[in-house]
Image 1 (spheres, rainbow, N blue to C red):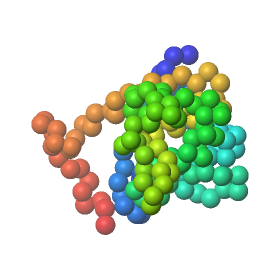
Image 2 (cartoon, rainbow, N blue to C red):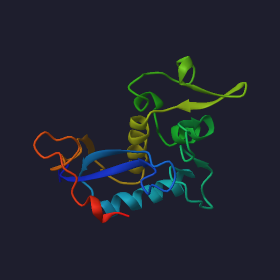
Image 3 (cartoon, rainbow, N blue to C red):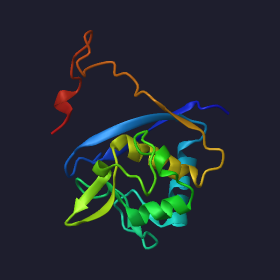
Length: 167
């Protein structure tokens, strides 16, 4: 089966009960949504790492779960690398290893450097890799978000529909 099913992953506060900031990434894949969700949970158990903010007993490290936390700790990176992650493939297209990080990739925590700063795109790619740890033959490719028919400053139909529906 090719990469025919289309889904999205939303980073940030999609429930809008905190800062309300999000970025959504679309992708096509050969797997169904249920398999992807189960693989994510299996990878959490395998690695002890989570990208979510819900507490679980088996989680040792949470990645980018607090407001304005765009840093992956070196301890979490070591675990991911143990499971096969090559950091240079997932950090904004920049090739570097543990001994050659660009200076601006570090997050300053008092006087010591505590982790690797990542972009939203980096985190999306990392999550997709993470899912693939526990999902055999997982094939995916990034895709564009579907075009909205109305609103979002569309020249032909720049209208808000259902505005009165929300209190």
